[in-house]
Image (cartoon, rainbow, N blue to C red; front, top):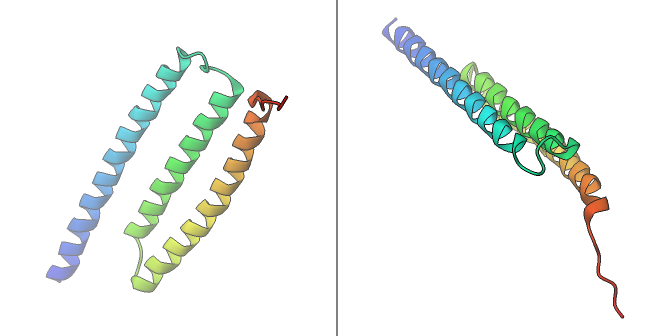
Length: 113
């Protein structure tokens, strides 16, 4: 019974820490948004797109952490981690393609001659 109580205390503490980290990250993202709003890139569609990518990636990481907190056993941990990594690899690949497409018109290639 003591092991169950200890596990509950640890899980509650980890959940509380995760929520605090989520709050800190939200504050940080708000700070970045305010900083971007005064930069030349500021409110451009590129800046908004990149900010959206950051927000989604951060949210995915917190969701992953939340799932790990509730893993039943080591196999569950491996499954959760594998799914997260596969999904993030696909997402980051798509985001990289989008960034390349967004920046194509602004790239100047010098000509020989």
